[in-house]
Length: 398
Picture (spheres, helix red, strand yellow):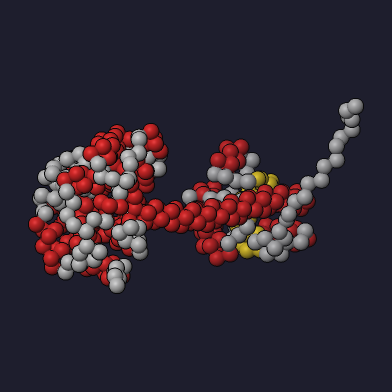
């Protein structure tokens, strides 16, 4: 059975009686009367002025919680003060209780348009003044609570985002090391190539976010090596034509690893370097370019572009697709230089590290052939920082 008796509802309002109440009125007696009424209700933190020209400077000094504002004042009207306040971010939401003897409804409408919270007609009734001020302060307290809660949530989101970003970086580095582990068990190669790439990109005018993205993506440039047979990857001598063809396919394997739709491609055997293996590996390079857009991750999308293009050459003699000049993605052209420089300057089980002059001479010999001249120039301009990174992450081989 539904009761027709009125429900009893208790509304808990949090009123801060230490709130700073700022009063602007050209009549001192009006200010004193309002302060007396509010003092009886427990309020005691007041700031006031009879000169409307001082309104904003006074508010800047006392940081009010609520403003009691007269409308008809000499020099500057209450409406002008209200309009100025609402143009300032710090006072855009400050509650304003208008005290006015004006009867013109257009004045009230204009005050509402400018964000007045409530009105009181002069002479003010003390009970009505207290209740209206408490109502406005209760709303402000709730808004402040929501703002603080929102700020707390945003900070938690920022912290969680930082944690996720750190986890993402670790996962990327682990995946990158998986491809390099048999050649470089420290993981420093992928770190250096990433740093070099970021410096070159920055020199070329990439934004900070773009530099960060390409630096992370570049670490995955050789992840496809995980699919190359050990007998070929670790061969001390020169690779024959068939073996060289197989090792080239790490580009396509990298594309497959970083694209979720590529699982349909048949995996090649890893036991031998037979012609059948080579033909199967070719599938990865030929199908890889068709699935560049299959991932939704910007980082993996860029990493797949780099994996599939960092062995292309400016003159078209590279692999896996023989792209030439500007048809090679810029990111691939950048990583090509970073990767070759690191390969030249780092010791490996099958070679000693080249000295810096020999590294630079080798890169210059590839200008306009292997390397994009503009990208090579950017690398050369950042040599001091690049060498500093090289020394910081130097390989130590016993």
